[in-house]
Amino acid sequence: MNTDIIVGLGSCGIASGAQEVYDYFEKNLDTSIALKKTSCIGICFQEPIVEVVAGGVKTVFGKVDVAFAEKILDGVKSGKLPEANRIFEDEGTNSFVGPQVKIALKNCGKIDPENIEDYIATGGYEGIRKALTMTGDQVIDLLKESGLKGRGGAGFLTGQKWAFLKGAKGDKKYLVCNADEGDPGAFMDRAILEGDPHSVVEGMLIGAWATGADEGYIYCRAEYPLALKRLKIAIAEAEKRNLLGKNILGSGKNFVLHVKEGAGAFVCGEETALIASIEGKRGMPHLRPPFPAESGVNSKPTNINNVETYANVPRILVSGAASFNKYSYGQSFGTKVFALAGKVKRVGLVEVPMGLTIREIVEKIGGGSSTGLPLKAVQMGGPAGGCIPESLFDTPIDYASIGATGAIMGSGGMIVMDSSSCMVDVAKYFLQFTQAESCGKCTFCRIGTKRMMEILERITQGQGTMEDLALLEELADVVGKSSLCGLGQLAPNPVKTTLRYFKDEYIAHIKDKKCPAGVCKSLITIDIEKDKCKGCTACSKACPVQAITGSVKKPHVIDPAKCVRCKMCIEKCKFGAIRVI
Image (cartoon, rainbow, N blue to C red; front, side, top):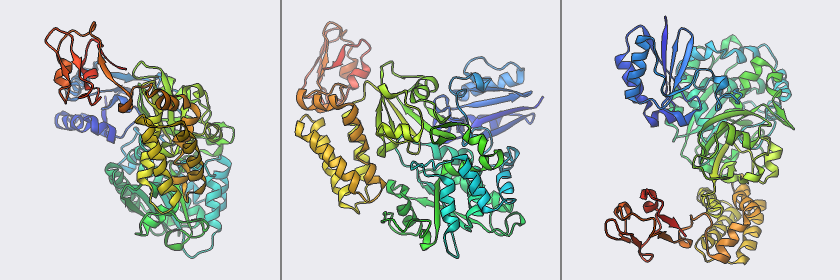
């Protein structure tokens, strides 16, 4: 009986110890058992993950360390696998995987991303073979029919965007893949590049055939070393198979693909800044028009799509437009990948059909609150997105519905927050990020976000006034309307949405000089309840500034003048005696 042991070696798995598990199997397996590797299957909260396939039966184990790997190996040899740590045997019945529909993530966690044979075995590169039997217009019409919109955030119809490039005049055209994923808490693009890089390469090949482009760039941030490694392997393998380079598959079509490593500037996610960076210039946006389809890389017609968009293209070519657009809600079609993170039990990567609600993702797939505290909001769209309150969790996933909340779909970040989150502090965090990442080119973004930051700092320190709220709203409006690029235009969104849905928290900070969530250090006091304190001394030992005094088995006391409100004492207290007031 053939047996395979497959270890998930995505970044999340490796960070959790999967490489050590893989090394153990590699050292101890005999030749009758095949050791394979794959990437993340999206169940990040269970990493490291090991899959055993014996006699056609698949068993998936989570939280596997070297000690448990030994038990798995013993079980494989004895024919009786351990019962502990099993995630699922049937994906359809698993509450995390079952509700998902995987198109862009179809192969992630299913194939060895460093082996082109695995990709081909799943139907890989059949999309480009089909495209070569069609005209460019036919390919573009098929994409239009599918309803695929750009998954980078703007939601522009992909087929129409390709039509612009095809119709552009020029002796040379470029295709660019934007893999400059920089939103805090987002890891969709990284997971696809680590788990299924050939899907992006093939998507770009199809785009090149359809539009007439003969050269391309994948612009990926250098902070993604594993994604870059696997991407470069995929390109080299495709070149050996005559799937890249000159006279692709005997078609007469040439397409050369490069990898450009970005230095981690968030603003380079904006199209014109990204183009400037590819050209070796400082990544700063410029006015449009001209749009990239008219003048992009090296002043030549250029098309830019993100990783998830390109990954969907081969599936649409092979299976047809209807296989994609049968998942629809309003004018949004297909599926969307989200990085589910924050105060949720099941952190990971999910792909869901349009129309599923935020609540279904957070509570059904994500398992609800990880802390036991009530859920409060989700941040969607990253720093340029907005905070959606729990009362709107029944909002369906589609571009129009999410946009109506004041947030944006964005590239797919979804950060869950519970009642312990201060929404004023959350707004400050995201604005701090965009303010620091501003390229500084335009005054409204450079200075406007700075002034907004100063107001939020005052409010969280208990020095704000009610007039500050009106000024915040005025600045948010001016910065949004007057900034040059999307970074500045959308930077005020976290402030605008928290003011819209959580204004009472701002007022509490200003009028009551209190942070209801107990987060803002200047507005809280940490106290020990004497009747609950057992005098175990754990809190005093943990205090970094010796602000806690008391005798063994006697109630302890905190000196508020010394206390720096780090909350380490709260974490150490086993009796619930220490509280924020």
